[in-house]
Image: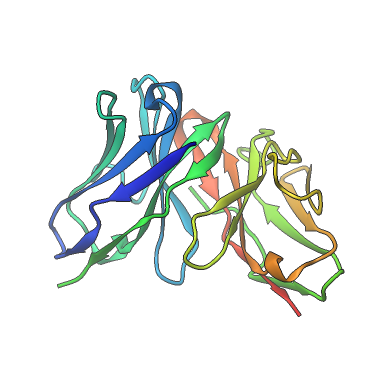
Length: 117
Length: 111
């Protein structure tokens, strides 16, 4: 059974850093591209980042480029999102998702990040 | 990376049909067959309901259908049921650099 569990969210101050984790079970991260998607309060879904199945490439949404880094640890079957220079507008629920042929077929329940003074 | 355009809301009575549009450009929706639709209920994880324009994952009722014409994709929910009341988002692959773009979202209300 495929399961994705995000963790690491919390309340942080503007300018600080935070690392989110997404523990995968029921499949190997090395077989799938993996995404981060976020939803700010009262707003729509926003694509954040993707890492290819072999880890060779990462792509980012314009609003996080240069500040966020997606990575994975195959030995732990865990996906990460390192978030630096956080801003108030980064406040959102962050979801990780498994991609299969350009569709996200499995999602986690999300973890809330709040950036506030 | 401009979001795909969806109507903010749509509604219908139980048993009726509702169609949601998703308008992009020739660089995303118009170029690729990789258009997906997701259903979001408050407090729950998004759920894939349509992929590759018109394909349904196993377990998704055939009341949900998708199509595309030019730069616009469509999601139709036929025979509306109370549990279909949710937010719906389209999504398209948009080239190897931009990669993904989501729609602005549509809230479907079952009257």
